[in-house]
Length: 431
Image (cartoon, rainbow, N blue to C red; front, top):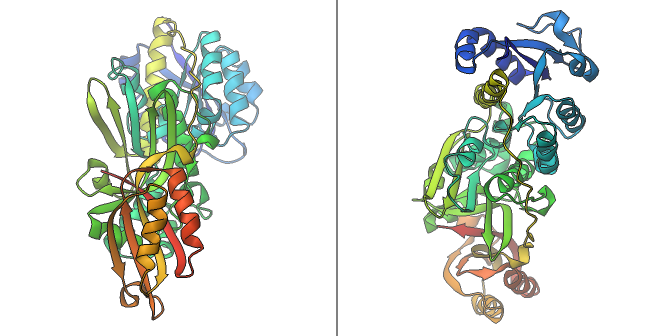
């Protein structure tokens, strides 16, 4: 058994600092659980002159070569974020025979399969629990507790910023712009919020979950992605009147031996469990052939929750180091066809601005019906409610299930109608 387990960090920001502090504070407890003490060896940073609480200056370096040359390092923990140089450093650490723990969703979404294979080829492990749900345990349950199940669908709220914003819009009746400014003041949203509000972060995470849940390799650019920047307070209010709430859902499912992967603002039935996941909380729901539906909920980001997941991986692989256990075989990923959006089938919510004149609804219904899209319900709102010009109205339609290509063809016809002023949001519906 190892006398100590050496850990080197790539990055020492807020989360890295929290990991160091936890190891120092709970060192004896961790040693008892692992079977050997944890020891911080080297810490890679950009600015070596900056003082970092709890880290000995002699441990700090700005060269990956210093980390790889340290014979006492058994585990490398990556906190850098972004694709490069993080990917290259993870690869180098694996090739050197070091286990790696990472929270890097972008690297795992784009390169996870090849890096996992590389880890196995070098007799080490690559763990990445914190890359998907922050403090929510997702990977470990899939790897053990749900292992007997054939998982057929994953539906998740996996971006805390957008969930906070949509919750606030629902509860306060405020506009997207006002809530975004509030989220930025509170530190939930970055000065450039694009990665969150345009669904990029969630697309990385659902791509990672596809590999875990289905053993299928899905690239982030194969995910049908739409963000929340077009959602209005009227959409929120209309959804409530229909018995729904709007959530940014990341969803993946196996359909006919092919995969659908989406990140879309979605109307979720108000009584569904995911509809009740509010604020900065995240949730991941799996559907398995034996267990049915099971959902994991908790804080999806932040210093403490992310450090918790990272340390869980460190302790897990630390037990392997202490006992000289070898990793299990890596099963190569399947490459199933990813269905394009026009082949996705769902119910839909449509918001359409029109001239308030006879025959408009009939023309819209005909355009939809000609493409096989059946209307489920219709609501009409006048300018006093919408804030629109006199002589206009806003139609809110819900439909029965139809393929995306049918909606697209019908909307092309509706756009050409003289009475159609604006095609607002077209959102899928769940529950």
